[in-house]
Length: 95
Image 1 (cartoon, rainbow, N blue to C red):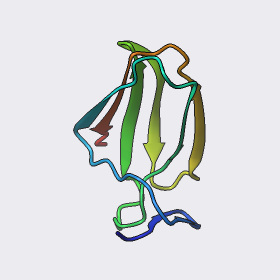
Image 2 (image 1 turned 90 degrees about the vertical axis):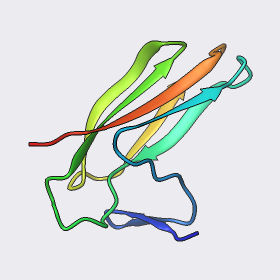
Image 3 (image 1 turned 60 degrees about the vertical axis):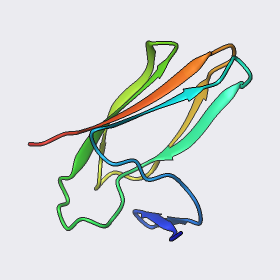
Image 4 (image 1 turned 30 degrees about the horizontal axis):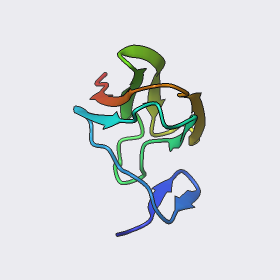
């Protein structure tokens, strides 16, 4: 129940997904867009902290990118019209 801070931006609500986590959402084709802001929170003193975020729509990758703590938060809008299942995978990226 605390705000999320990504860089200089503070978000009143959001979802913090730990590394080595996969979330699967059944959508039944009922949605048009998936909107998010991606970033690594400022809770770690390690400026090189990074995570690989992959988003799959019905098993097909629609987004895959390395997100670093030092990067600005990245707005993301994906077309998911007709998608039955959305999966968000977060993997730690160690140097």
